[in-house]
Image (tube, rainbow, N blue to C red; front, side):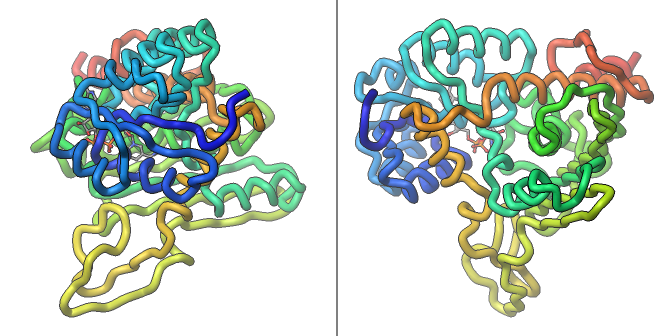
Length: 365
Ligand SMILES: NC(=O)c1ccc[n+]([C@@H]2O[C@H](COP(=O)([O-])OP(=O)(O)OC[C@H]3O[C@@H](n4cnc5c(N)ncnc54)[C@H](O)[C@@H]3O)[C@@H](O)[C@H]2O)c1
């Protein structure tokens, strides 16, 4: 068993790559970023300079060959996750893969199998499993604070992604439901102890961004679980004012409510504006809610701490490729439900290549 910080490489050099590099920088005893790979040389070099990363590659396959690297974090667009994860597994690297796990169920199977066959871990980047407020809610629920929990609400909303590929059916695979709903569905599944999924009903549409995308920018999804429980997941790419992420948990004996951005924000008014308030907030002029310790409150350093311990064999992995696959199955069924205008029961066999096509094909039929 190796000792010391896990030596990590990052694929990608933009939004989530920065988040991972910063989070890993907060846990130097557990992990260190040794290399970055990205086709955009100037971005990769800038990331390396910001976080003191020693090596920069333009091709992730070079990173896969780097003998010093033990694990690689994939923060590239969704359609590339599978190809990269399989190549990394074959090169003997543990894989940390951002959500959504991938775009097709066949890809999910290939990723899981490649990691199993090569004896490496497939760690799924579902940060909500590590978000301190949400972990507190689960600890209370598990200790019996609310009696039997029957309803989990989770919502994640903002005004749409920063990068152009997210809006493209081919490169993203799905809209707000896929991009953000994977968090909520995964969260409810994890919170309830991974029960079987029974059915899903989803309403979604393109309400605000139809000029630039065919993808959904509003979605409400109801998932029924075995054990007489359900969840309501709300997602939006059409909510002004920056990121909004919250949960409500209801049992027969109580409830708890958490809002990720509030309670760790300073209600602030500024005539002049200032640097940064919160993820995806477009302005700091007028009223804003700047958060402190944002990465910590999201749970990214805690997620990486756990992944490092899992790689060192000190903890059983808590967020895996199998979790990502269950979420993907639910997303396919949710898009089909929206296209059919009715509840879809599991097991559901996808008829389309990409999740959003389950909706677009039926809607256009
Ligand atoms: N857990 C979360 O809360 C969270 C938040 C944001 C993004 N994400 C996920 O992270 C992933 C990346 O999203 P992002 O917001 O960082 O996107 P981004 O567009 O900001 O960054 C994507 C990066 O991938 C790189 N890239 C593109 N093609 C590549 C290739 N062939 N080889 C290597 N690198 C390549 C780009 O150069 C860029 O640096 C997505 O899957 C997204 O869903 C997760």
